[in-house]
Image (cartoon, rainbow, N blue to C red):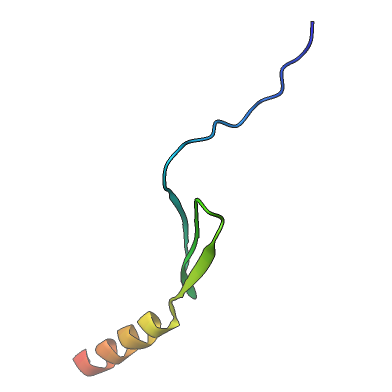
Length: 55
């Protein structure tokens, strides 16, 4: 008997994989293999300014 290798199922259509973080708010890759990073440092700075103003 031959063993079958585990095969990945491929899905048709558009999709976007997202990995959430802090310094990099989100690292993303789409169904074409294009990747991009959303920088989260600006969000951290805005949060710090809001906290300073409210204290």
